Length: 120
Length: 111
Image 1: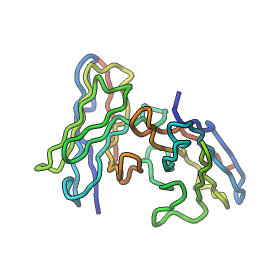
Image 2 (image 1 turned 180 degrees about the vertical axis):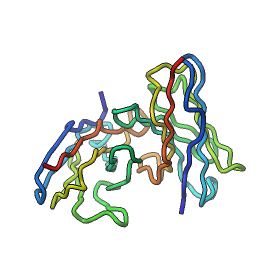
Image 3 (image 1 turned 30 degrees about the vertical axis):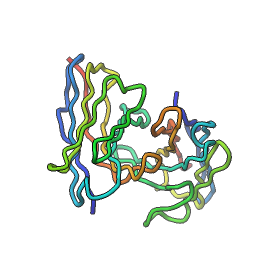
């Protein structure tokens, strides 16, 4: 059974870089033709797609975040990562990683999510 | 402002049927891209409820059904139960954004 788990600092200072990692277990990132994505949810608000990565390294970003976001993959560790630079309070959210069956498809399964708070 | 528009809230009595709409445009739903639905209880991870407009993953009761027409999609819940009270989100692909888009979410209240 495929499982995903986010990890990273829960508190980031304004203007600094948010860094999260998603570790995949129960299946190899490179063994299938899936994409791997990041989604976030500000407290009390809706879901926002951040971006996706294919195991070969092809990336796709939300245009509204593209200038600040980098997603990378490490197939040897079976994990993929998210970096958001120059964060502000508006980046405070629950960050989820998920498997994306196709760029136009659904997300499943999801990780448990990790809360990142941007505050000094 | 979400690319996909959902009503903020809907409600219904136990046993009734409710529908949640998801309205898009010619660059997403209207372009033929599939719509997917998620259910989220407070403090929990979104769960895939419907994929590919009308398909239910294993374990999802057949009380939940999805449909799509033109530039909109709908999630229908029949035989409403108290345990259905949750937030529901639609998701699709948008060609102008070259990525996934979510609706703003709909809170379902069971009266």
